[in-house]
Image 1 (cartoon, helix red, strand yellow):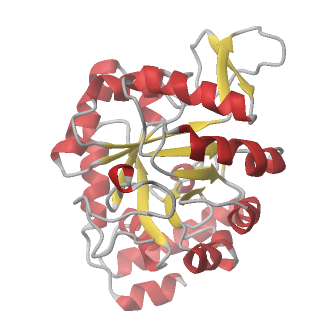
Image 2 (image 1 turned 180 degrees about the vertical axis):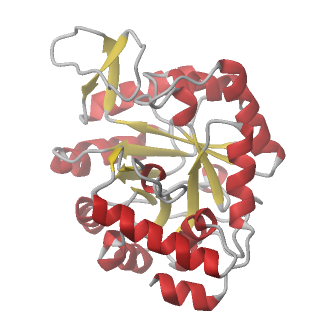
Length: 322
């Protein structure tokens, strides 16, 4: 199994996990940068369709070739917007485990962070459920397959993910690679140890503020050849702008967390480095990380994130940041 190499930057790279797929369907690598699409589906606040398309276009023009989405994001809106844009040659990952159903369906839940949709979600990690969900995602994306299908947040369904969801995806012919995307680093470690995975996506647990994944998950991924996609690098915004009221993991940051982020911002400023740049580049410091997943809701945010990845950062600053 091989993964991307080289300095951080948006240029696509060759090589990807190749344990399972036949040669004519060998997995492709996304490149060192993947654009996440949750914000483009109105995470916490709406994004007009023209702005969403302009953001995707900006990323593509600037060399980003990997795009991550999920039916959970805007109840299918992210997949629809991405599907309307996707150029030939784009690398795409989506997720399974939440089926979209009409609001009010027994057992379904709404997602308050994505207001405005008439659809709700039902958790389903069965073999039939994940295939049904992936087929629906492919319809929204206008594709016959995706480069990566991730089992999404199976926190309370680990055994079903191991024994049903992951094998079903691997045998479906609908995804070139299979993985799991979660916030819980310990649960991901269990899945890497017990299942055959090509990728994991860890959200918010390998950042300047939260190094949980560094203890067990990342070393095990490096050992087993599982490529890590590092997401949630700004911990919901506190590492972009650690001002009072900043969010950490979607809620207002505790005082101690805010103070830690402010100390990091001061250390960065003393070296002439934006905190954003250090926060985004930090994930590349572990060899198990193949790509970072960046969120953006405007072309300006795409440009700022990619500029941050290009800022030189001295070893002395990394030492101070720990």
